[in-house]
Length: 231
Length: 240
Image (tube, rainbow over all chains, first blue to last red; front, side):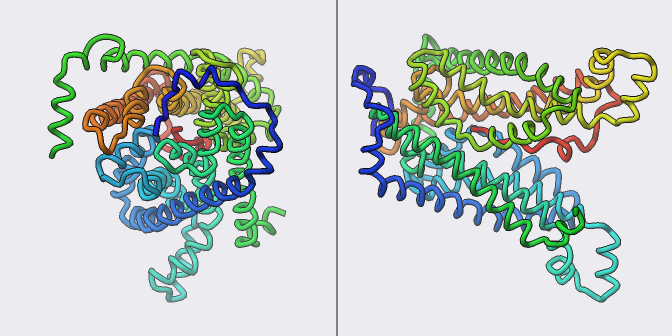
């Protein structure tokens, strides 16, 4: 695994661009990388949600927890992705595996998911909460039947930002042996195959935009009341 | 604790502290790239965003700039810039600046846009020209968000400059990329190298964030320091 520019690389002739033949011959590879990209993104977001949502609920109930949790997730978010990935790889000893990638990506999603879920729960009007209490809802019922549904638009906004961010970060994991579509632009770069590079780059942007729009549609579908109120 | 003792041995070697590949030089290089890219991006983006915010033009453009900025994989942009513009520092700077612009534009324009209409009308009522309204009223009120944009970009540039080591740039990404190439799992020296680079660049990113926080407290007028800045900031993308 030599990631560094070998002296010969630059001397190597650049392949023609766009090389449609290459695309035709490698549709399977492209599909595989796309799937891998989606898999890494989905796994990381699921873990991120599983960790950030309970933390957000706790932070809303016990306000003192909010600032320290925000600070911790904020510092983690600040660490450059390559540094975080290699530190996980070396210190946790997870190596060049999907585990390393998913742990790192999950860590990055935490700040966005946590901050937006807290903001969402905070946005629930006090009278709605009181009405639920007056109807005899337990705390748990109020949370799941009233607060989460009302907070949903803000929470989904957080999920959208986290998704787009994660799709971009997945490409960096190409340097630790994963990478999804990032692998295409890394390999394309190394082989001086501009077509491969551009395909990987463009598809990863398209994937981010499409995922964002799809989640927006889900958000609208789940919260019909928000739509009718706006109209 | 073998990792740790390897690390100590690695750091105690004299060559780590001097010359081109020495740690002090790598830190300085990294700081240099980041500073230059952030300053160029600021000089380009802040006036543009002030104008956009002041005139109220390009609303949808603004939202899209922020969103597209987030969707572009920084690593891919670095590699693409290299392929288009060739070897050298310039392509890397182009990529770094391009990545630093969206957060500055989005935050600054939102900052100007959200200035209370009453305040703006009061300023106009006092006979201020458009330029005066912008420079004496809107800009000071927008400063917290201008600073948020600059901070976000600076942290992102520090992170992305790490990736730029892959296309031959110096800085703290160098030991990480080299270490990975030498086989970080089998080679003790490579492992130490990677850890040193990663820890230093992580510290540098966090310090950048802290430094901008301090700078913000200095430049923002006392009456304008909001307690809920984070809630209003346009959500911006990740470190690379």
